[in-house]
Amino acid sequence: MEQLQKVPYTYSLYFTNSAAEELSKILVDSTEGKMSRAFIVSSGTEAVEASLKMAVQYYMEMPIPQPQRMNFIARKQSYHGNTLGSLSVGHHLGRRALYEKVLAKNVHHVSQCYPYREMKDGETVEAYVARLAQELEDKFQELGPDTVCAFVAETMTGTTLGCVPALPGYLKAMKEVCERHGALLILDEVMSGMGRTGTLHAWEQEDVVPDLQTMAKGLGAGYAPIAALLVNQHVVDTLTKGTGAFSHSQTYQGHPISCAAACRVQKIIQEDNLLPNVRKMGEYLGQLLHQKFGENSHVGDIRGRGLFWAIEFVQNKETKEPYPPSESVAWAIHKAALKPEYSISLMPGNGGIDGINGDHICFAPPYNCAKEDIEMIVDRAARVVEEVLGK
Image 1 (spheres, rainbow, N blue to C red):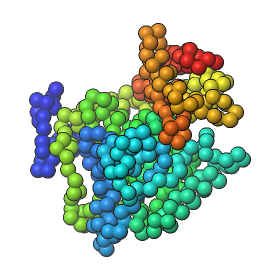
Image 2: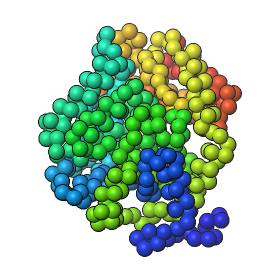
Image 3: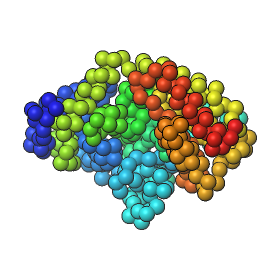
Image 4: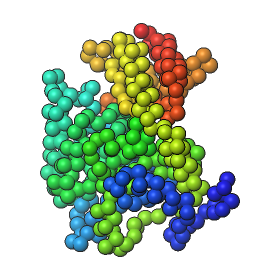
């Protein structure tokens, strides 16, 4: 309300505002000098769209322009938003289907990091990561290394694949491929960022710094529509020496009311020391999920980090055979959980394996949850799963 009384709106093409300036400083400072500018928009989709455009502009404004760099590489079973550009880099087949003919043809996909189903028997983590890095290298070579603009990936997958953390060394290996060929690394932290996985930026746990980073959901905690794109200094330097501006704008970017809300959210996270609680309660959530579901014959995998976890369901624990899509297992669990006797929301996901097969549910408790909350959530979830699938 205070911001509404002071300055409710500014047109960012001509004016800035103190709330946007303050939020930008909070975000940049939170990276401890690793990122240097923030571009504030209204949704995660818009942030991803902005990241794609900034990547293109970066190469167009280099001292020797590289206009041939128009290819993007992303991952299968990913989700990056719902505009045509962001839908193109994503691989959510259900959301792409209706628009397939008009999606960008300069986007190419490589395998996701999905150890539960994609690691071979006897394969080590190091060997699996090396195999994925080689697949990315092969895609660069197939397209022409100097035609690739950026590799786009979720630091930790969201609801499409179901909370799969990157394996140790994976993102570092992917960035090494990008750097070898002069391409950018864009990390999408719309779901996993701003504290959800235990650190403000999920990449802080991965020994890698992106060239461009998107964030959204945890930024404003739902109090106002807001998202942001963080930009590495070397990208800023190139644009500064070029036109001096990002050739992209939207009516409500840097909206003062949304920025004021996000500033307050970020201050509460710091003042109430919530990130240590996310880590502590996240570890407890993981322990309880393994205790309650580890021996369940219908549960294939339990994975996550911080306060972002998922359970993948299977018909056969040994063969990992999924349920038929016609049974809509994840949605059946979601609907059952909404009954008065349970009254919880278990976020459903399907098609995680190949866009058609696969069922999982996600858990994302609030940052300020207590042990009693975690116990209640897991206990009710266990009763819901038993009701729908049995033990």
